[in-house]
Image (cartoon, rainbow, N blue to C red):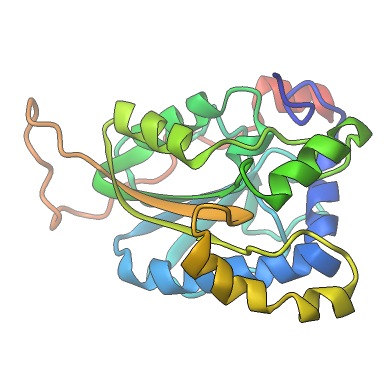
Length: 257
């Protein structure tokens, strides 16, 4: 089934996703995912870090030791996004091949018409042994049930196409990645009442122990394999150029402005 949140969708749905993350259950999930990234990013090194897709105005990459960090978002417009956020399509990145050390995809795949193309772009721009970090919603969880009930309303995030963890891992393997870490988190149902959510806090520890594959969301960290057919580029070479050409909106983004 094709997601209603793709290139042909009305503009502003990504802003709706950011608004959802700013309040209630969305904010609880944001805090959890920031904690997950804070545990992983300090251990990933290099010169350039790229985040594709923006789920909140706050910096999700602050814990990284990589100093040069760039965020690309298809809906970024002047005055609506920080100066560090550039406009580009997730499946047509204006980035040179083999130039980025870490790519972060925070719930980017669920809201693209061709998520496999997004992963192919991530593979293209990553250096050998570079890392991709994927955050996704788990369709086999309370969150997946909510998504099936609310998808017809067209509201974020329920209008997205939730991708199973095994499918994402299979895609990564086909593209030449080795999965080095998977985690599932947020085992409570996505209820908006704060009092109820506090009472259900026990489900986090219980879920991680008793039903670890039913978390509402997951994180995957994968490393790009070194190709044996070509020489390995030395890590001590001069700094790479990140932008392949002057960044400009893709054709599809131009149509939606």
